[in-house]
Image (cartoon, rainbow, N blue to C red):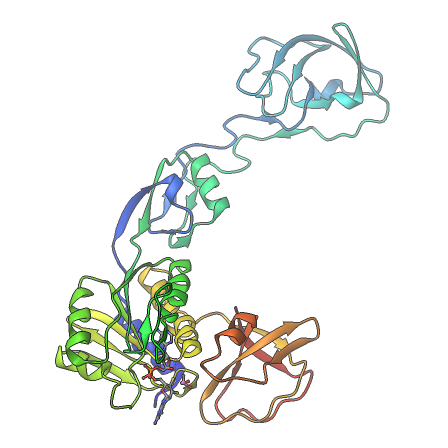
Amino acid sequence: MISVHEALVHLFALADPLGVETVPLRRAAGRVLARDVAATRTQPPFDASSMDGYALRRAEVEPDAMFKVVGEAAAGHSYGGPVGPGQCVRIFTGAPIPPDTDFVVIQEDVTRRGDLITLHLDMDGKDNVRPAGGDFSAGDVVAAPRLLGAADVALLAAMNHPELPVARRPRVAIIATGDELVMPGETPSADQIIASNAFGLAAQLEAAGAETQMMPIARDTTASLKTVFGLASSADLIVTIGGASVGDHDLVASAAADLGMEQSFYKVAMRPGKPLMAGRLAGVPMIGLPGNPVSALVCGMVFVVPVIRAMLGLGTDPAPQSTAPLAAPLTRNGPREHYMRARLTAAGLVAFGQQDSSLLGILAQADALLVRPPHDPARGIGETVSYLPL
Ligand SMILES: Nc1nc2c(c(=O)[nH]1)N[C@H]1C(S)=C(S)[C@@H](COP(=O)(O)OP(=O)(O)OC[C@H]3O[C@@H](n4cnc5c(N)ncnc54)[C@H](O)[C@@H]3O)O[C@H]1N2
Ligand code: MOO
């Protein structure tokens, strides 16, 4: 059995970054910027007022000074005329600062009668001018790779990019396997259950930026598995669920081997998730997840999501861990790295008493996977431990 770290190294070796495609700005959120993008303009493009008030010369600002209003500047409507000594321009937020002026007095600090304003005694010295280029200048770069969030999309819009180069989404074929499985909404026979894992996995991988395709459920025969593998051959990544262990009906590895799979590894020293396998099947990276529902989703988070991120060009990093104190003690860990379902309380982490890898209800209640290294000794309240936030 190899370690989680070694398994990730093997998986990253299988995960080649995909190509680049252009998408409209409206479709760019959640995508990964694939090339550096430079601003085509400067923002603001002119010195602009940050307040509603009156633009005038700083040198003339003093308590009780009077000015004559000679024009108006609003956002989208500059005032182009001259502004002489003792004169000012009515100005609104976002408007270009008129030539000859360099200071905006907010209207709350002014008394206006007709065309005349008088400055108050207690005004502050702030000029309320946003300098040209204060946000960004033409040529400033948003560097790739970058997972684009709402602020990035707004920034790139302001830089005047109607479309963006982004990494193509990895297309993941998800294959659930097992004679006992029927799809949600169907009526299972007495010895059947509902295929749930593929749905959780699809949600997990789509959130990480993948496109997923749920393949027909493969039955526990070599012929059925080979047929479904064939349907998945155009994917960027094939993920199977179940049939990975050592039982007589666990046929995923042998069916894949018949089809020429080059195996990278089989079995990882982790809990849950031990019977994980990976390799390349007709050129396509393939990851075989264990069937137990919690095992499949933990392996999805620990292995498949980092592979998706690598394919998107986001680098080869393990799922990020945080640390927190323990709020309840832990007994010593065995030889496998243990990902324990836990609650994150104000006092710290509390692992659930039940850790069986079939218990989706517990996983759904958990806020964290508390990570125990192999052979970790017993731990007491207050000790710092690592966890993956859920
Ligand atoms: N003798 C041994 N038996 C087992 C070992 C072992 O080392 N020696 N390992 C155990 C561990 S650990 C795991 S994990 C499981 C993994 O087995 P498989 O990957 O072969 O999974 P299945 O047998 O197909 O299914 C296990 C369990 O999960 C249910 N399942 C499967 N697919 C789905 C799905 N898509 N949605 C919902 N539930 C699913 C399935 O019905 C089984 O109950 O092996 C242990 N055995
Ligand atoms: O690895 Mo299994 O995933 O312990 O249940």
